[in-house]
Structure formats: structure tokens, C-alpha cells
Length: 73
Image (cartoon, rainbow, N blue to C red; front, side):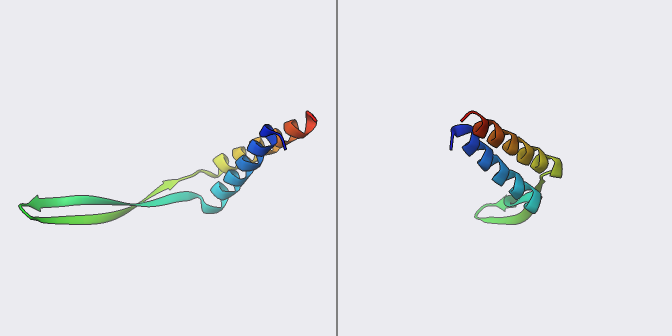
């Protein structure tokens, strides 16, 4: 496989993952207060949403790159 076709396959995989998971969740620690050696922390869960259009564009771009890579042979 050529580089364009390989990159297209990777792009398709990432696009499918974006469509399946629809977001990335991560945990953030923050200090509420700190008085001397005593401190209070809280964990908050944040979600970074991925729009479905992003996944669709990635899959279509990957298909186009694979087509271009196969056509050049």
C-alpha cells in the first residue's frame, strides 16, 4: 500500500471511532482550598464532544485517499 492509501485507512479508523464514541471523557483534579498542610480537592469529569459530522468527513476523506492511492498504481 502506498502512503496515501495507508493514511486513508488510518483516517477511516479514526472516523469510525469518532462516530462510535461521540466524545472524549477525562477527569480533572482541582484544589478547592488550601490552608497550611490541609487541602481539599475535587475531581470533576469533563467531556469533549465530537460532532458526528467530524467522523463522517474523516471516513469520506479516508475513502477518497484510498481511491487516489489505488488509482496511481
